Length: 71
Image 1 (spheres, rainbow, N blue to C red):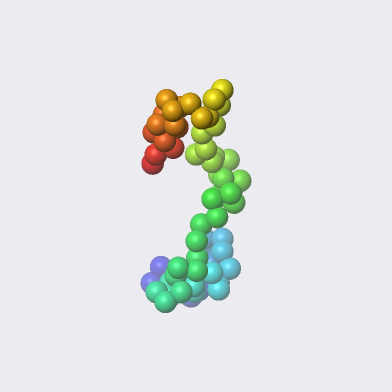
Image 2: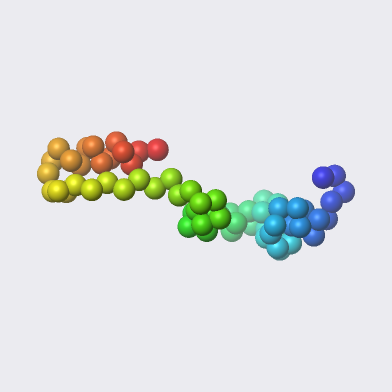
């Protein structure tokens, strides 16, 4: 997209030009963070796993839950 303006890029990716400007500015890029709830609504996928246990205080359950939740 050489020679593209913020407006061109924003239109192509579906964001506001000011968001594109922030994302491309190294001093302000940290201000642009993905919203996982919004991303899940948009994509229809959340990468969420539900775990139901009878006794969460059981010392054998905690390590299993930690393994399930580990990235």
